[in-house]
Length: 177
Image (cartoon, rainbow, N blue to C red; front, side):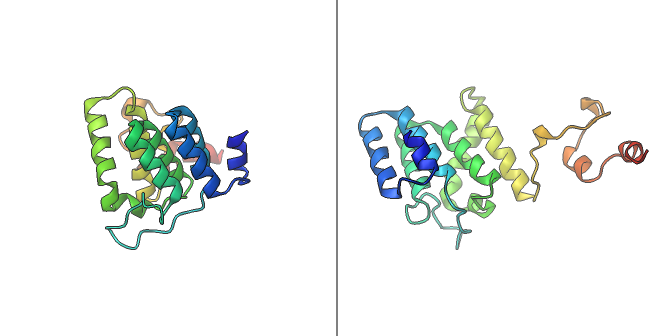
């Protein structure tokens, strides 16, 4: 019920902050995560950073991301952070320019460690954020994993992005008939 109230924007930021603090004080991590997910989902788009030293996780920049970063610092649930950042990127709530700021450096370092170590708990979440970040950075809107190429064997595909932008002639011809 509280999640619905957050998503319907019935509760204000102060009330959400209070509920979050109650959860954190009681070590109710799952409940705090639910509140944060709802709060992040109703955020308005964040303005691009004014400079490379800007801090995305500053309360003035984004109260919800500030709470999220504090939550991650206490719980180490990085998969949740990756999911929320990926959601914000994919819904264009987070400008891709924020990914190049100094405040994101520790996040990128952790993603590289996660991917290189093959951490099974957070690997998929980290990879999805990385994929979305790269695709948004090059201006692509569709994730590659949802792009299907009919009539081509998977092992023969080297560059899905180029194929999406320049469909193969065989498919173009069959579409005309």
